[in-house]
Image (cartoon, rainbow, N blue to C red; front, side, top):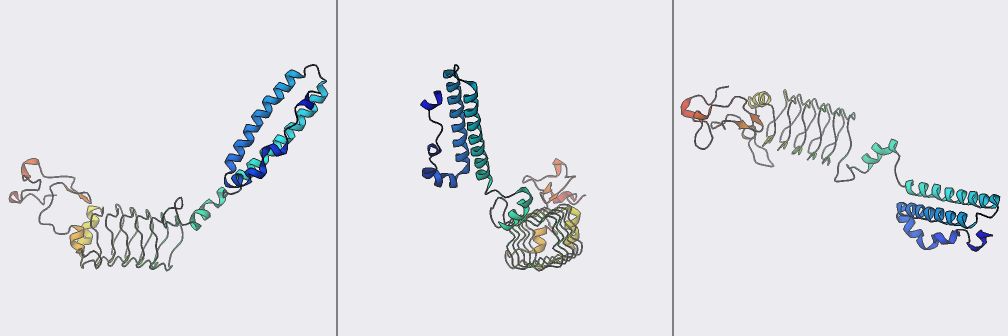
Length: 280
C-alpha cells in the first residue's frame, strides 16, 4: 500500500517536548508552525494521490479523513492557545482601569463619564487620566496632579482643586462654577468655552492658558495673589491690565479686530500715541 512507504505524520514530529517553552512564550508562532505543517501535509496528500491512482479509493479516503480529523484538532488547539492570555472585549474597560493606563503608559486612570461627586481624592496622581464628561461636583481634588489629563465637558461645580497641578490639561467646555482653584497651576491648560463663574482663583497661575476673552475679563475683575509654587502673579498670568498690548493679541486672547498696519510700531506693538490701541 502506498501509505505504508510513507508513515503518517507522527505526533513526535511536532517536537512538542523541545518547543514547549517557545509555544508558551508565543502562541502565535505555534499557530504558524501548525499552518506550515498543514501545507506540507496537503502537498504530501497530493503526491500520495498521484502515486496511488490504481489503488482502491475506499482506503485512501479513510486515511484522508483520519488526517483531516487530526489536523482539525491541532488547529483548534492552536486557536485556544493563542487567545488564552487576551482579555475579553467586555472586560476591556475594567482591564484598562486596573492597569491605570492608556496602553499601560504612565499613571493614567479611566474615569470617563464616572460619578465622582462628593468624593475625596486629595494628593493623588491623575497624570494623563481621562475624566471626560465625569461628574466631579463638590469633590475634593486638592493637591492632586492632573498633568496632561483630559477633563473635557466634566462638571466640577464647587469642586476643590486648591494647590492642584492642572498644567497641560484639556479642560474645554468644563463647568467650574464656584470651583476652588486657589494656588492651582493651570499653565498651558485649554479652557475654551469653560464656565469659571464665581471660581476662587487667588494665587492661581494661568500662564499661557487658553481662555475665552470674555471669561478672562471676568476673572481679571477680582484676580489676586501669587502662586506659591511658580511665583507668578495671578493677574499677570491672565494678562490683566497690560499697558503694552500686542496689536494682534495672544494665543489665549486673540483680537479679532486688530489695529490697521499704520498704527503698528516697528516692534509690532500698537503705537499708543494714536490713542486707538484699546479700541475693540
